[in-house]
Structures are given as structure tokens and as C-alpha cells.
Amino acid sequence: MTALFANVPSWDEFTRFLVYAGAFGVLGIALLAVGFKVFELITPKLDIETKLKEGNVAVGIMVGALLIAIAIVVFAAIS
Image (cartoon, rainbow, N blue to C red; front, side):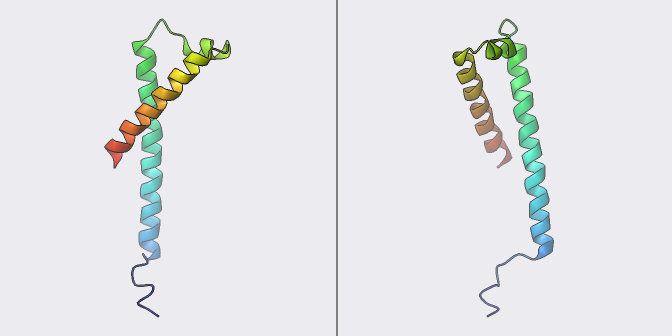
């Protein structure tokens, strides 16, 4: 019976894994926000919030694609 649960991590390891997952999650979200702010600085003529409030679908698609692209780069950097 003990061989069945031989590879199960202890509670200390499980807690450590949860802390790592939380830390990397917060780091990933912070880097995603920084990437978005850098994009806003690069494109000063494009007021994203105003365009989204006006219902501009193209800007929404562009922002979504931008966030997905930044998330892929952040994921590759963290892992």
C-alpha cells in the first residue's frame, strides 16, 4: 500500500508548490500589465480606452491579440 503513494509530495512540498504557483502567477500578471503600458507608450496617438468605449471592434481585437502575444512571451520566459 505504501508503494502506491510513494511519489505523493508531502504537505511541505505541496505548500511550497502553491507559493511558487502564486508568485509566478502574480509575476506573470504584472509583466502582462507592464507590456500593455509599454504598448500604450509606443502608440501615443491611439487612445485605447476611448476607442473601446466607442465600440471599436478592431481595437478590441488588436488589444486581445497583443495581450495573448505578451502572455506567450511571459510564459516562455517564466517556464
